[in-house]
Image (cartoon, rainbow, N blue to C red; front, side, top):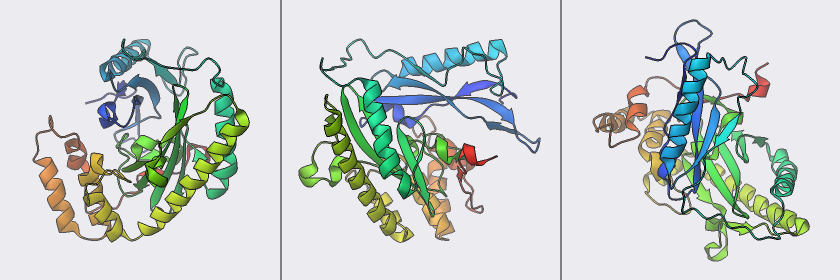
Length: 314
């Protein structure tokens, strides 16, 4: 059992997802609940790593926890040396290409932030973590992630349901901590473009061209999320998508059984939800990453897994 103020980290199913080059390991501190009964996880520190060599990120997270525990660090009074994010080197055979005339990363980020503020802000999105912007719309969470690496940007979309646990954190979290990888359904914007064009593009050296491209892509992202969000307000349609097993345009496969169980519970089809969870609980936990979450879900309770943004908590 964890002890109060002990530092720990979580494994994530995103560490081997072929859709991503990178992932992050959440590092957190066990802190007492306000009620005085039990512990909860604090806000997270992130260790960024590569899916080609995930163990290096986990080793760094474990070493960081050891340092923090030995130093008796409290998150509410962090030392100056504690960072919000850490990164590990890529594998020896990982080659990061960048053209000599590519735009500086800082300038690209400034343009990205400006476009997101102008286009996503009025649509109800707020800034989350790792270039992800999120909004809550009814019982859905919508995410737009501008994933930049190697001189290129990929526009990634996500949809989640507030009554299902976040896929990466697997606990209730504030909206402004919700990450694209927490989404049950994920898609690249290329899936919605003519002829399934590339998910991403090089950001080059022309700031005006980059801003125009990002604005166009963000407009498409908003249109897609509005369309499918409206469609999936009907939970029967959402359940059909989750159970389809398709990977394009939306991929719900990573957490389909957990999400389907939560949708069935929300629809009042409790026997079917329980049957799904029982099947997961019966599996060997070594072979099934959803089994621990299946053990904790309770179809007799309705849970909102998305808390107000940290800035709104007073």
